[in-house]
Length: 167
Image (tube, rainbow, N blue to C red; front, side, top):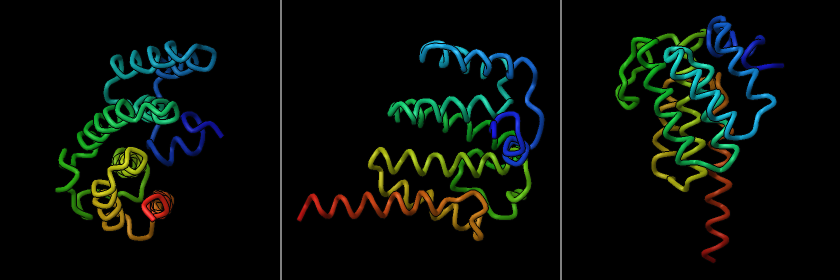
């Protein structure tokens, strides 16, 4: 299923993706890595409140191992989603009752992006930050609708690997 145009898109982002964004995303399917990044940045700059291009761009960078850039884009996505969801721009200050994180739309995307930041933090070796992000996810999403347990497992696996290296 196509995350941008299918059921998952509605479940995560909460609505239709503008035609101009879809055209730019279509360019990414047949372009070089530089073309992909340029098309996604064009989408973000042209439609700064549209959330899917942020997701695609931070995922693109994370998949390439460009974790600093993935972190920067995800942080920007979190800020835009917070604005769209009318919640605090400081993720530490967000409370469970600030938004309904269980329904499609900016609050759910915000929560999903918080999970992405936790994942990126694990991959960057930022254990303390990853633990804080996971604790926030657990508090805001106690039944784990967005699947943060995968990030917890990755964190545990990386911790186990680090123990082997030091023994």
